[in-house]
Amino acid sequence: MAAPFTFEAVAGGVSGEVSLALDKSGNPSVVFSQRGSGQIVVARRNAGSWTQEVVQSAFTGIDSRPRIGIDSLGNPQIAYRDLSGGDLIHAAKRNGQWSFTHIPTRLTPDHRPGGVGSVDFALHPGREDTESRDVAYFVYVDAATDGIGFAHTGNLGPTPVTVQDDPNDLTLFAGPSATFDPSEGYFVAYVGIFQNGSPQDNISIRATNVVDIVQGEFSQPVVIEGSQFINVRRPTSIVRTFSEGCLAYFDSANKTLKAHVSSFFGPSGIEVVATGINNIVTPSAAVQADQFRVAYADVDAVKLASRSRSGTWTVETVDAVSAGSPSLAYDNAGRTSIAYVAGGELKYVTRAQ
Image 1 (tube, rainbow, N blue to C red):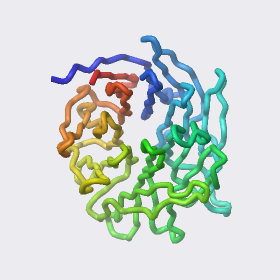
Image 2 (cartoon, rainbow, N blue to C red; image 1 turned 180 degrees about the horizontal axis):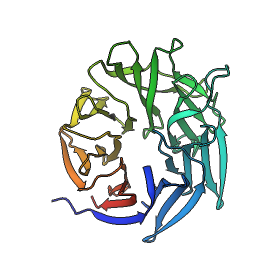
Image 3 (spheres, rainbow, N blue to C red; image 1 turned 120 degrees about the horizontal axis):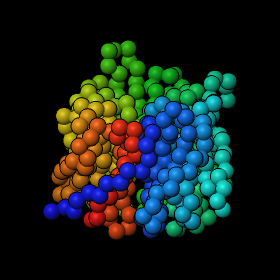
């Protein structure tokens, strides 16, 4: 029998979606926006106690939750969409002080409105490429073109660069997610929306990866699933192990949470994680002991789906409440950590392996 979940109330007056990250010791940090004020706040737990710190007062979270990572020194770094101009902001705390950088994101030289839509990022782990350690790698929707862009904070190569764009503006792109694998490869997933004039657009789930950071080159995008009979409008979630990958996404047309699982040593394909979902779901995928897990929120509960080594998914209820999309993470001991908002309250849930 699995160990029970432990629940903690972190903060009240919280709106929107949250992002969770763990430091090397397994201590959690959660970034969220305060209801009403729109302030970005980071809650951190250390030695059993939670503290809160206001980072910035200008954030807009329409389809774009703030994202957080913890660098090699234990400092938080955050990516978010600025309220005033829609710019991609990179906030980093070093030596007790926050710095804020407007990341260049425009993919075209024309004068159309700039800014970004939804954003994800990951910090370079720097285990092998030590010069790149803690460099932030961003993937985002370019508001001017509706293309997918990539940018970084290092001296590694061109930034920003186009991951994929349609110069004819027939295909729009959305829902990017990104991750590093243990070999420090950078992988990206996103959604393509082809506006074909019919009642239902042609939706495709796509994936690519960096092949040459110096030249700013990505691999040819692979279409994981594409059809007029699916509907994916929320962000994807991608994670990798040494030999496998998991790309989770929610098909609202069929009320189905899906995962494309790829492997270097075996077959790859789309797997059904859960069906009969009556909510708008942004999944959060993570890896526990080389096995894939996906957290999501249905209308009646926060749930956790676990994949066995044989490829079977099982779903359990974490908390029987109506909640926003959760954020899932695992520490080195395999402990489950989930953060989410229910009834305006930020909750943090843990369970030992």
